[in-house]
Image 1 (cartoon, rainbow, N blue to C red):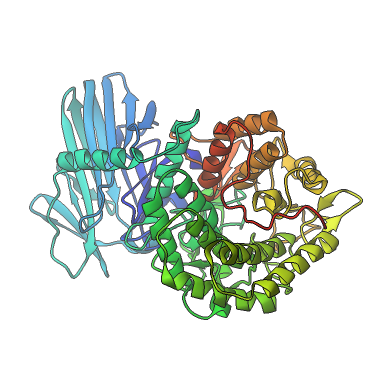
Image 2: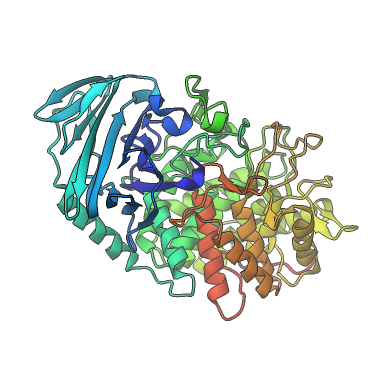
Length: 602
């Protein structure tokens, strides 16, 4: 199936992807970054899946999330009648459960259930036994139970059954994971958990403060962000998947089941702006724990509990989504130098104080430590926010975010009485600003460039007015926005940067789709420079790319008219919330994250 044919269910510690045909093809337990027990999305049915649907495996006629919840309902209209499949994961207590309720809507429909459990990303075929009418599968540290209302028969290392469901009947299947050395968990009441899960989500959504014209899209994006939150720590993963390709059949396949620091400012901004201060505070607490230590040891990403070692390896036994290999586990970019993350961290901690989150005594000490490192290393080349695997460069966006780090620290001293060498910081901030305007700007084309001395552009340049480096009315801002619009737009959507073989900025073969966050940045930048109608038009086009249940992947490939990259992607849903909020205002304005040092001159 296409990436957009999937929907997500989750319990805020892990997530499953459910296909339009009723098959769960991706599920990692017990955490987002644990080995998958259903991995057919990156291989074949033999790598693990759990299918429930009408015999013959047709796609669902329609599907939706219940209003303001993460409860998925898929319906099939067949010759014999209509059947509904209700999929959800209850908030965890204490083990993860996946509940699938088959409901007869009208007539009588023949259904099939088939399950293949494969631990360790589809590699380990478990030992399966029957116990009190249920199935237990064990393989190493993992054990799962399937409680089925219909008898299952084994064969070909799978279990299946065919059954009929008539109008008014409801049959509940419950799948539970636990460590294999522990006893069998208590079976949950599926119907009771359905009610409690619905109440959990509707009560949470009820706290949303956004009430503009795009409320449905904003709420679905907020639910997605909440579902990608690892509840025990507050960390938010970029996506629940690994190795869904940015280029179909290509090698640009990465593991996104980790927490990126650069998501901090944008995620905090979206949560705070929508009324979710508790979640923002949890995310800030995760951030401070993760980055605690020496400033030079700061990483660009961490595990959901703050783990620092995320070694990258290739899973050779998986064929990859549509043959896109390799399948990667872990992410080697964890060791890169990306100076922009210092600005992202300082910006997020500044924003948390401006927004009135309860003070954290550790925060300013950590900020001072990071600033001390940045003062001595801001002028080094780095890999940049796009994690290029080519040579290090003096990326303009990285330098802009170094400016942001100092600007926000100065603001905290001036506004909140923090202690620090503010005169020295102010001088360095101005020095960085001047250097960027001299070395990172092409006056002949009236645009900033991707890196010092380069001719290429970069969609991250759209953030220059958004973070307050220059005001929207500055001619250089308008020139940059229009240059990116002219040179990096394909079929109306924005690419991150040129990826032609002769350019090879990122050191990788092949192409990629339009990065959706960049297109949202373009909509925001257009609104800020006064092109509000163009911004609204682009925003509506981006909303049209969401799948039938409102989810976005990392990229959209105009060549194929398909979503590509890991799915669903937090970095796509966060700017959706930002732009909806901006366009709902009577006039465009700078976001709350904008600092005090807005510069109008050189």
